[in-house]
Length: 300
Length: 273
Image (cartoon, rainbow over all chains, first blue to last red; front, side, top):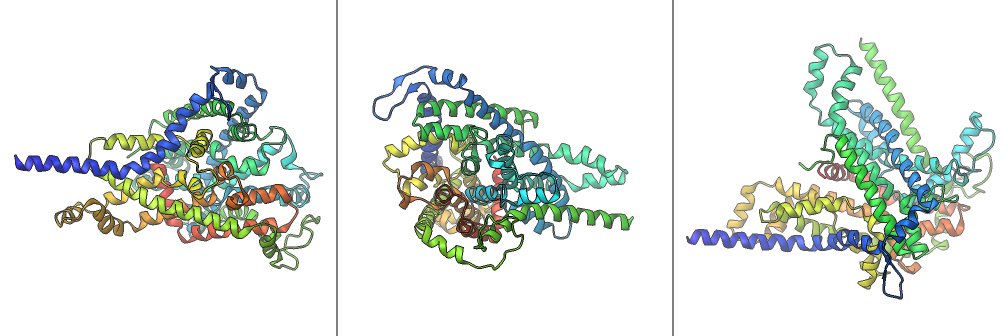
């Protein structure tokens, strides 16, 4: 009896301690993740003004958005940005396969490929605007010297080239992260599978196709999900390299949201945009997760 | 057979060297520009620096309030590191204990991870304004003070501590805080390293949040200073590129020193939600 009581008291005490320990973090996440999520929805159906109280606006801002050409262009650019993760992941997979295994110097290669990922993306943006510069940029110089082009291209000022240029800079930065994720996946494949296949005389290409790729599927889709989320996090790159321009040629949803909110003080419209982007990304993430067999980014 | 294999290895090196070179060239180009004080728009551009010197690095100190930006970045990063160590260790420890609601808390944290910070900027700005923290160090650091990935890094590390050790400490009459401080943390050096590195990187590089909530130049951090330098001066001076190198150097140094902790943090975060 006494033991039972003590045990129960200890359990309540433990629970109280755990809740106290968790409280500060949970409070922060409530304040900066959960509350904003719902507040966004509330803001998007109200007419917001810094001075007057808000008034009900219904779906006005959503209609406004759907009839705006800029919104559709921005959505298209965001989708192109997300789709650019596919070739990037393919390239990262090639690199991961090349540096996996006991190749001499593999660690050095890995460091080089990963080096650009943790860097300040504002600095990365400046590095790349300089690479793409019309007169002094290395890229124009090399292309001209090789005779690929006859006139220097103003990459970041051109409607056709600005988006691909920003995507190249973004790929340069995240490539190493994809590689690291795929390498972690490759190292989880049990080596005896390869040995068995080799003994059975399965050729290398078939081993890649039949063993490596199927077992790597969760990692590949995890990389894809990171690519999807990257359309949020590449704000810095787009904002600094082109500020969304020329026109709206490189505008993506997150830069459009920022401009609507903080340059035009249309918090209500920006909130509606945020809700739409969040829903689109959720849908894509769920789709990617389904395609991966439901365990990309699964919790162990 | 052996010769065939050797040529395959050689081919792999060749491909990797070419790709590595492509990855490193942008660094070289900026470094080269930063140590040249000739007209940087001269055509054709020199592939090697002519008459290298460090004048542009001196210019940076005169053209912009560089020490102020650096100080602001350092203060915010230190706040973020301290916050992450304390809050994440506490939360990670709580998640290793059995208590009703533990599953719920884990699930809540995992779903919060699906909400990118950038998706919250409008309300986050309004909340920070309501708290009266616009244009302050605390306001700059507040959303960065705890990180979900890092909570799970601590949790995994604490779970690896032998249970017998924890029980022994408990029998000796140590409370939870003491167990965390005396038993768990000394055995979690790697997790602490991961926390410090990730918190530093995220706050050091953060651009969008300071862009939104700083009002005065005296509160701006390095990324903002860099972006403003570009928009005021255009890209006409090699000092801009000297600035880029000065800002990147600490990040690269930290990364090269603690690459293992960094990658462990990111992959454990990625693989475990």
